[in-house]
Length: 445
Image 1 (cartoon, rainbow, N blue to C red):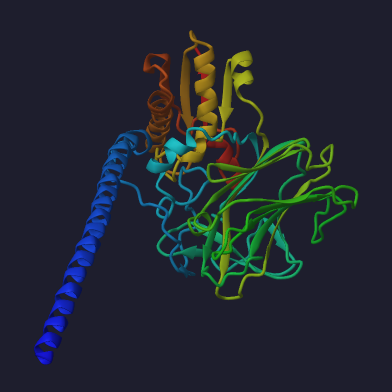
Image 2 (cartoon, rainbow, N blue to C red):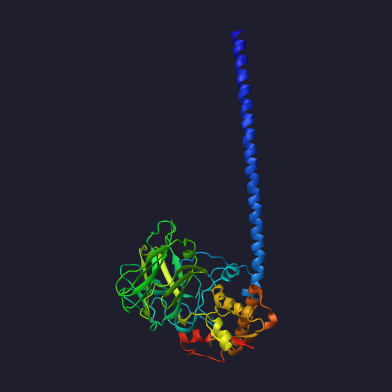
C-alpha cells in the first residue's frame, strides 16, 4: 500500500507540474502571440511607409530627373579608391557638388532641402574640381607643407584631393583675399572608417589672417568629426588678436553623413559664421569672426586619422562673394543671376542644395502676387552648341518644375528660355570661367 500511495503521490505531482507547465506555456504563447501581433503591425507600418515613400519618389522624379524612372541610389558608402587616369574634362556642363554616380538620392532629399536656407554667393571667387589636374599630382591651384594627390574613385571620373593627417599640416587653396560677405562649399569623401576611428578624428576648416601654414593671430575654425563609435559633435573656436573668445561643441550625430559624401556649406557675413552639413544647419554664431575682412585665407587640416587606412578627400571647392538675401535684389532691380542653382554634370538633374535660392524665389512670388518671371538657363562651352542650347532650356524647365511642384507657384507665372553658351560671363578656357558661365537668371516680366 505504501508503494501504491507513493506512486499516486508521484503521479499527482507529475500531473500538477504538467498542468502548471501547460498553463505557463499557454501564458508564454499568449505573450508571444501579442508580440507577434505587434511585430506584424510594425511590419505593416514599415510596408506602408515604404510604399508611400516610393510613390513620393516617383512624383519627385519628374522634378529632379525629367524622363527618368529611376528611384535614386541612396547614400551608399564611397567605393574603394582607384588611381587610374581618366579624361581631364569631367565637368561637362555641370555645376559643383559631387558626382552623379555616387551622390545621395536627390529624390528623397529634395523635400527636406525645400526648407534649406543657405544661399551661396553670387560672385564666384574660386572653384576647383581638379578637372585640369593629372591623377597622382598635387593640384596646381593649392599649396601645402606636406603632400597630397589627385585620385579618382571606382568608375567615376570625378577627381578628389586626398589629404594627409598630421601635426600642423595645412592645405591652402589659392583663394583671392576674402571680402566681408562670402560663402564656401565643398564635398567630403571618406573610406576606411569603422568603430575604431578615433574620437578626435576631425577635418578642420579654418579662416585665418595667415596665408601660409600657421593658425595666425586671428582665426576661426569649425571641426567636422568622423568618429564612428560615438556622436562627437561639431566644434567651433576662434582667436581675435591672439585671445580666444569662443570655443564650444554643438551636439550632432554625423556618423552616417560622413560616410555618404556630405556637402558642406559655410556662410560668413561680417562677424557671423554659419555652417550646414547637407541640409542641416549646425552652427550659427553671430560674432565668431573679427570685424572687417581680417580673415582672408581658407585652410584645411585633418587630425588623428590612421595612415593608409582612414582616408579623407575633398572636391568641388567653391568660394563666392555675397551669400546675402537675393529677394530684395529681385524686387528692387527686377533681375538676378545666380551660380547657386546646381545640376548634375551634363544633365538637368537638379541638386537638392540648390533649394536655398529656389526657396527665396518662391517667397518673392508669394509676396508679389502679380509678378511673373522668365527663367533663363546658361551653360559653359563644353559640348556642341545645339546640345548646350537644349540643356540650358531643360535646366530652366527643371527650376520651373521645382517652383511649381514644391512651392505651389502657378505655372502660368513662369516662362523658360535656354541660351546655351551664347552669353558667357567668364573665360570658358578656365575652370573658374566655366563656373561663372553655368548660371540661371530670373527676370521680372
